[in-house]
Image (cartoon, rainbow, N blue to C red; front, side, top):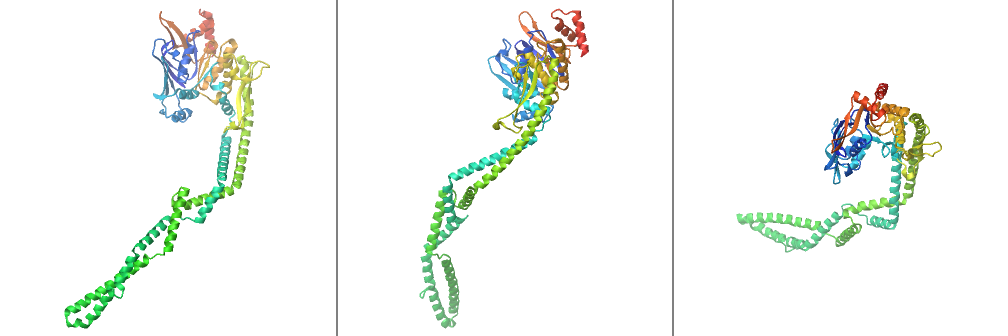
Length: 554
């Protein structure tokens, strides 16, 4: 709900601060007093084009600040602000500020955080509905008619939304599988060759390291094999060290008793023989471990080189060849059995499409029934508003298949025929602004329980009518304002008398400067203003008495 409006240097308005309340508020004033300027100023905070012509002459910029009460912390306004990275504390007012410079350009702020005019327009759809001849939002925007009809008919679209998502998911799965199948089919010959080659080679994970380690070991054995044989010959040959030590030991055994030192020498030689034999054993062990088959070395080298070449060919690491072989094999299997898979996905897609169409059909039937009730409700409102020759209908037509969506496949638009025999046309085709406003009022009354923006503004809805019709308009506006905030720019005393709050817009002259001002009227001032609206420039006692009767009647 709009709670306050502050205007600085907008056309004829020098400085103006207004407070607003819930219920029906009326704005009156003589023709040319500046009522449109007030709406233009508010429009700036709702994202209207920032025209430099709105800046008061001689001033550098115009500034408009609007404050709104937005009690629902989890509503669409909060979601919209969050999506745009703006923060508003729960319970705090939403303050929208717009600056328009005299030399062109404008800036916008939401709670002192920079914002775009586009965001202001989006916020405006949730904050204020302005109904007038040139308004292109609210009921004049056919894109919102389906949602309004669904709200009026209490139509639940959840089943259709679920069915639509399932259908789209099935279509996406089918398209993806078909694309993959088509791509693989183009590469089938290569795929068959690659799978055959990899399966024939049979790469194993970790094989490169095993082959490289074994090859390196055999290459080392090849290098030291001669040295090991030479060591063996020195140790165990007929003229080797161990044989000579054994010969020396046999000689010492015969003479060791002749001297103590010779016995000690024999003991030392025995130890050397034992150590030498152990050394000979370790050399033989190493030789056995490093022994290799030249043909095996050649085979391992060939396998290793082929493994690395195959990896380079497929642009993977050697250890990735085994996984690649499995992946390509699975792709080939899918390709060979792809027809069956596609057929299954096609059946699933067809079933999902049928389920969606069934849900969409149910929505169409529900909307058709709701449209009949809405048309009847609007019809009862037309005659008292001097639109008894007009006809209203809710047109429901099928959308093209590519326009089907989670809310069904219906295009809904409110249409009217203003004269007997005239064809139906969109609301926007009505020529008369006052007639258009009355049609919108009839619709809003019929849709009163379905909500909308917290603030509604009707701009000269009573243009060109008076008497009983103006009274009917006033009564309906009062009824419509019961659960919301409704502001009406009016020339009708019958409508003005219905207001809970009354603002008078007037020009003043000080000889050099013309200014537009607005002030709230008390009870006595209201009576005088309504009397002026009844009688014109000269207010008579009869007009005051009639004004009193209008006020008492409300």
